[in-house]
Length: 411
Image (cartoon, rainbow, N blue to C red; front, side, top):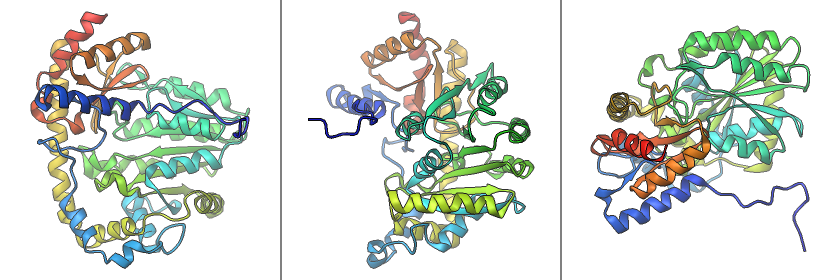
């Protein structure tokens, strides 16, 4: 007897990240932690192999009364003070010209899910980068959408030609166009677009939107680990150039920013030229939020407000130490990769560096060989993701040359 609807995807989900994390854990138990390189985990870890939980964040969280932790949030759209401060945190220092609204979500993932659900009709296509967080395509499929992928890179920069081609293929053929741009600190390559690249994207979508309205999903999950934090949001000034037929929804993640991955708190920040356009999106997001998760973690929202209002400078100082650590780890890996000719995609900042393997069959063979040598990484399309966020400086040293040697052996 089949109880599931015919249109459902009945193939079991295989979470490649957590499967490899499990293998790495077993290898550590068998060979000793010092003999295993675990570059799988997409969370910030310290130099002793422990997950980072910012003292400012969790001291603040622990001061929240139990009854507040137990209580529902003020609204399924999020607590009003949280929504105001998220708007300020995300775009407030950059633009005041755009109309905007915020809907609280369970992590940045919730914001991505809302965009996938509410703009495109069943069977239409969402435009994704070809090298990307795997859950984009999983969510698209779950919402009964197709995925059209632009090539992320042309040499060492964003592939504007491919991006434009994929958008033009859909222009006039569906009701709306949704493009996903995970920037800055792209997962999994660590690329960040220049302001000029963003300007070209916005100007191009303005032209396209004269025929078909366009929505940009800008996933900024890792933005608060930018190496140039003071200017990390400068590119958002380009959003002021959007025509009335273009909208951007920014997916913000408290989970990443506050090293509180399990608390699942984030937001969808809706921005457009007209109040009416923002309100239209806000209405459908509100209904979806109520129908799917009903309420976002109240204590996480309260805590974000406390951090911004009461512990802001302390928090930034604590986070800055780990940004410096990320920069040191990535610099070691990139220098050694350059010295030994290990091919990597253009990296600027962030949690991950990706080895360039354009042949996916070779990539699978290479990934298996790395595990045989107790080097655990994550496969992505056209590459192998190395999580420098969770590697100590000592584990980073010499890793690129080891990986190059193994690549040469399997090629």
